[in-house]
Length: 415
Image 1: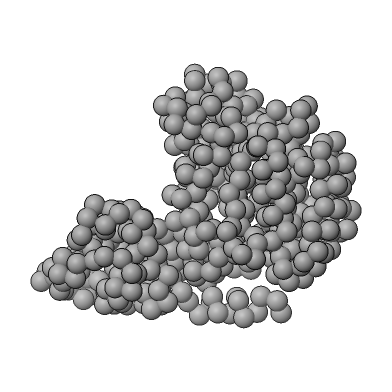
Image 2: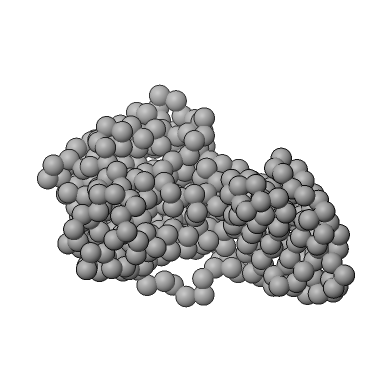
């Protein structure tokens, strides 16, 4: 597999998180000769939060996690660990009662392997939809994974959850919280079927900070809107999207009980840095991508309206193929703004490619030269800014171009 040209040039250094151990192994769910199962053990006394796809056809693991969170309130069982089990190759989605049976069986097996309650086991699956999960294969490796748990197995865990990804996605940051240094580390997968709400993506983020479950859930929900829900590759949302955030409390800080606590500002910044980094890596690994593109919209009626306009631009096949062809066809951006269904003033609209003013006052800028726009489009990191001239709303989303390779990958996915 050829690694995306937009992949990070160096492998990030991931700081271990006190109270979190990981393992990866091969169960043969779909792939041969590669790890396809990840196991995480999160120490007793930890809190957990989650955000999930709102798809009407969401998978059995998503439904299980939602029920587990609702039942536990985000707290682990007294004196027992939380557990996360993830497989790639099979989404366990649209599998009916069989999917529910697989989730229940895996929860029972993982609970037994790690001496915890079944309701403390969180699951995620990613891969082909509509095929029954061979959960017995996963059960067969759980004891070995439990015996090999390590605080340093971040790269292996990230690689085990990949599907069409071309590189593992990891990020780490630190912050000061109530006089203590706290760590935030995580990994994600995603490459195609990527759009807000969320995408065919999984994300697992861990911290040693002490954060109460309600505060942790609020922080995760709020930051998802600025990270995983602000990216798009192809406008398709998945049945399986899951992001889990666990806090072990082992950094020793005074517990944060309110998400808006000013003392937690540094932690929130670190959390955002990790989540945004992971979200950007997903776009950089967009199937067939050759351009990483930031779309900024200002001057909208509201931030919500700006977000909708930015997504209309980012998801337009005509815009995305123009970027792929390095064609500065700014008329397609005008088209996308117009179809977004949000207020825009045609005669106050302005467009920039990077620092190049392309259009203003509803017309091409007098200073704009087509050769400048064409030269700008040859870069692999691009920024488009659009002001729609009706208010103070603003938003930023990130996307990639749409190439022939995207079609090849998805036409051959099950072959």
